[in-house]
Length: 135
Image 1 (tube, rainbow, N blue to C red):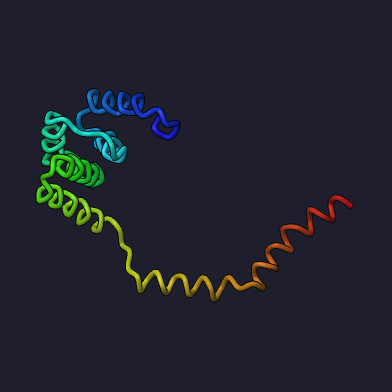
Image 2: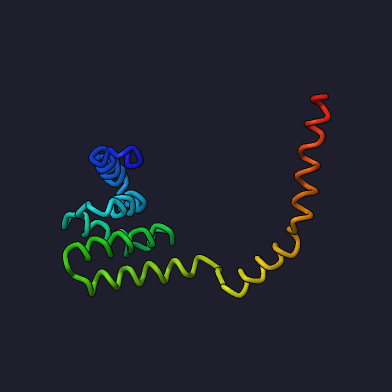
């Protein structure tokens, strides 16, 4: 619905998702990503309670942090918003194992192996059997 541009239907759907399951962090996160949606005080209290729950997983906590950051930012409480954004980013950085030096080494290894000659050889092997079968 969001992708089709039906913003109101998307909002109704997201709200139905967390009404049915209050820990549905992705629905709150999706609302925050609409950029123009404004969370109610009740939404904010519900998200805060869920984010503090011991029973949610790491990804859900990240979603709640970013949605709460947006909720507080929209209210002009930038200090609290920043704390939630920072917490979400910290949790997210613990999930990923990105290191620039490792990525650079991997890309260099790919460039060393995936030479123009290798690509041409693979293309020839993929094309020629098909062309020969047409003869």
